[in-house]
Image (cartoon, rainbow, N blue to C red):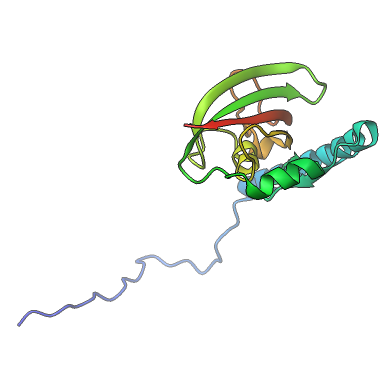
Length: 170
């Protein structure tokens, strides 16, 4: 007769009476990243406030930590009835990337699948509730833009501005 039998857990052969030691290097790096995240959030909050004072552009914070420009009353009405991108659908997206000083980094247009993370996280989250033809400004902290490594155009830990235009569904 065959039965299922689970073996008992094995005891370590050499036990130590000392408690496990905390990895201080990892803890220090986590603290550095926590401070850098807080600093990025502070910088972008001030930047969003300055855009509101200068141009009247209002922003709402997204779940990822970035800021997306709010729709006008007319755009809100259109957005109620227009189809939104769904997961894995392919849409044309124009993406203009700028530094916080306004200088142009890239201006690209391509077809991307929604929530396949082909775009930065802040852009992915922004296009989820956009409609075809809508434009939005996204203020993205480094941790939801290009991260700590950056890419060939953006340095690591760099906050950026995305001007996103959602094109047609493909």
